[in-house]
Length: 116
Image 1 (cartoon, rainbow, N blue to C red):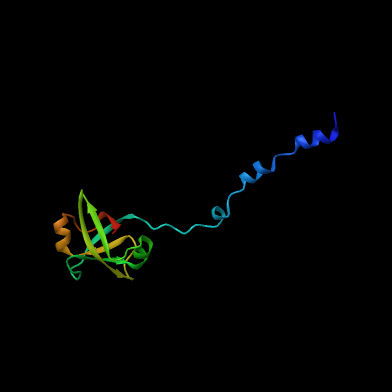
Image 2: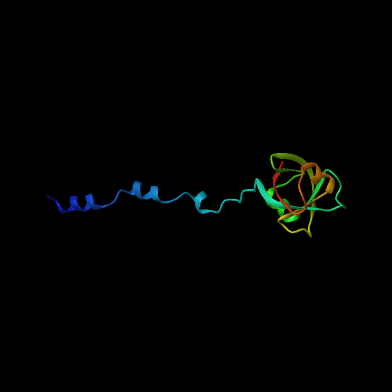
């Protein structure tokens, strides 16, 4: 038996070691995905026009809202035009009392909002 051959047998295969290393795309942080839907509180505000809702600017950016949102509660869905406002809390949207009455929801109710 040759001592040189036994050393070569003990060395690990380079190809199997390279497979363990993740690709560069996995090491570099990927861009944060936008949120598809979020549970928020709806507040009645008489100054809001019917057919629109006021949404915080941070929530608009996080969800990627471009103009319209869909609000669903108790199996009912309705689409509204989204207007951005900086002073609103992130977990709250404002809607008109007429729209809330049509959906059958009270002030400070929790609904699901989706970006359309």
